[in-house]
Length: 173
Image 1 (tube, rainbow, N blue to C red):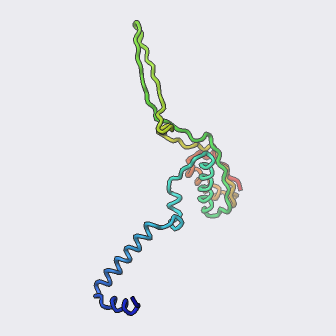
Image 2: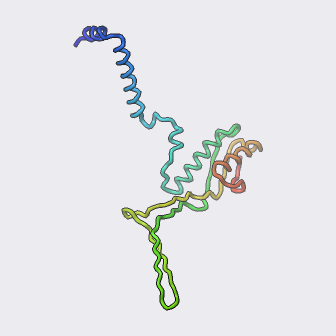
Image 3: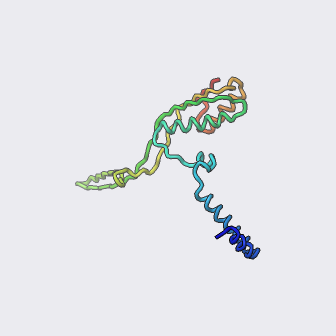
């Protein structure tokens, strides 16, 4: 089919049909690109707010340090920032258990024995609750922290983000 034949066919289509075809084409394109968008095209806020799988205490600490550095560097008057976080304890888990109680009576004495057995599925214990590590202390080294108002802003931000007492935070310039 030649271009001229195609042009004549398009020219013979009524005005309403062209608009309907264009709208349907646009809807298909929008649907396709929104559904198949690559992860690099998505905004950074969605990757930050999503829940991340953290497999070790060190990954957890690094993630907290990076997020805290990003927040603190945005405070007015703060330059380069370094953060070190120490943990009081690492991740801990509460496992699902099956509780069985046996009561025996001998003579006039009643004895109860309670046993707890951890429930396994596919050779893995069933985790009922994951308890995140507790932050023991934080050291922040930041340009601009020699000024009292900036130091107080940093202190307030760290206290709020990590939900820890001020006496566990050291800020240096």
